[in-house]
Image 1 (tube, rainbow, N blue to C red):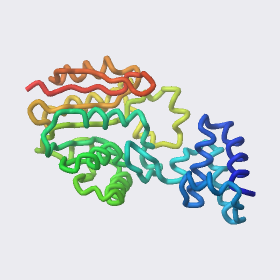
Image 2: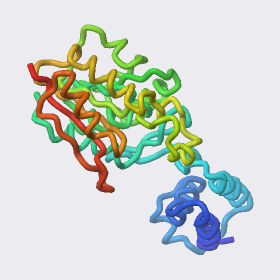
Image 3: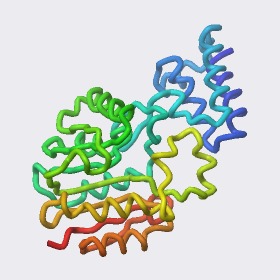
Length: 276
């Protein structure tokens, strides 16, 4: 079987479970052969070895069981960096890039200090540190396996201005203050029907009590103690939570409270500036 033939067959099968079947098939093939997408176009008639075809069929079988492609290949792009991913963390999503875009747009000191709460793979923290080498970024994460994963990502990106700490929200940064706090915490309600499509991802990183607002509320409530005067807090939240999160920010003493829409037109992030 040639590369082109395998791609065609895999795309047809994956179209039953994925709207991005052709892209997914290419990712699997590139991963197995350890080549770039451009290689596939120039070598479409290359014949697969029996060993590669067997391995590819096993990868395809996993994808047909709805296992995320990111977990199968173990890597995923985010902003302008590439990250190792694993089932101990959420897969970085394009909507979360809005947090990076927003923080990079703020007027901050040249050597700004930033705290990313619940960093997971390190996606937000590492994207900020990678693009602002003079910033000092702290990435806080409760799950030890995720801490190790984020540390590996920092090492592979040669990012030296990001420190990854094991921390239950603010627990490991007592006494420190930051110019910006950013977070993509759990915000899905326990009975949300969208959870069915996320069964491979860690529930602890998805679900929050109090209609999905418990962690968002805790972060807002405690943030003033960890921010410098006029520091910013920016949070990702559910598409229907912008009003509630704006109220949480206002109640915690933030001004200039505002929200931004994601690339699908949904209200996705909200933030404010500490009013002191």
